[in-house]
Image 1 (tube, rainbow, N blue to C red):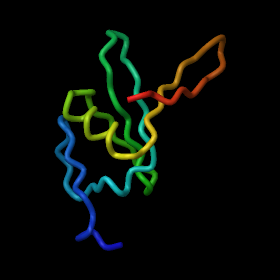
Image 2: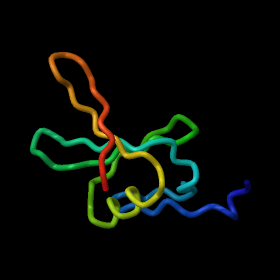
Image 3: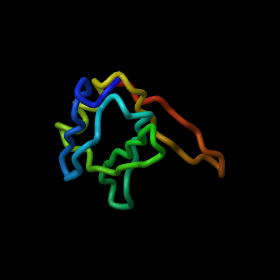
Length: 85
């Protein structure tokens, strides 16, 4: 698949061109110490991007068809929970 057939990955808070929705590998949802929600988007080329969880970003990432997971640490063990949309 060439890049002409791909959907641009346009996220709030991200000013990078040449990223495509089809190149997303997985998405993690997480919170900072002030309880602000963020998404970390992992790409198939092993790069990752962290963006705020704005309404537009949430809508795009939840509806993209890629799994969105939250990682929770319980007693030193990391659990992956798939986030329901």
